[in-house]
Figure (cartoon, rainbow, N blue to C red):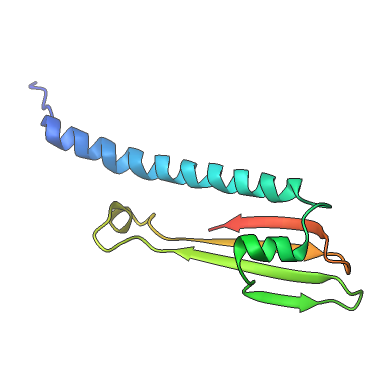
Length: 115
């Protein structure tokens, strides 16, 4: 029985199609964890105005009955047409940051979701 070998070019393409999306997803997850760790370290320290100057105005903001504020920032990224992301399906993502501030404007809770 004769063994069939794939040409080197085909083998390399297969490796890239499998490895690049995995590397990209891991990089995004690590970046999200770093951002979440940073904002969690700012609990009790950062003020609402500091966060707005860093992230820009929130996409949504609500003042609760106890005087605290819940704000949500949303960032969406799309792959450029023809970029490897559009070929693999991993080129776009959404990052959502939700923060709660005390009535005096101090950060009390933070969560970051990436999908």
